[in-house]
Amino acid sequence: MKYIMYILIISGMIWAESCSESPVESPSTSNYLLYEKSGLIDSITGTCSTYLIRNFTLDSIDFSQYDKAVLEKNSFTDGDLSGIQVYYLNSDTAVYVIDLQGRGQINTASSVEFQPPKRKEKYYLRMKLYSSVCTGELFHLKLRDMKIYGVR
Image (cartoon, rainbow, N blue to C red; front, side, top):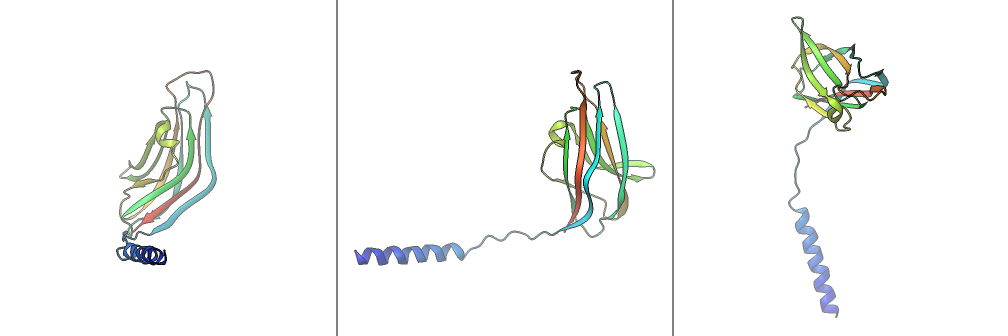
């Protein structure tokens, strides 16, 4: 019986050692907080016949040292044609870096990766409330706790 216990212990040690010899190395990425707005940014309410758009100036953000960017947010809408967009202006033309459309993209809790220009730009936020269905109820679009990270 002692012989079997020694074999089990030695086998377990060999198995544990073999697992640690080949660790999986993941590429290291670093996220740097570049913009943060805590709390409620805006809450839009309207009926199905309303098409409401609100624009906000976010800030000048320098992405020159970052390969990509990540947006984290807490948002909700029940309007199927609502949208949240982040953009900058280039020769008076809006260049959208984030374009979330509809309930499926706006209500998701996952972060959004995007490719910003590798320079400093002034960014804007656009929120659109709209629904294709008339239920007689009010529709909502809410955005809060927005963070933008640069990723190296």
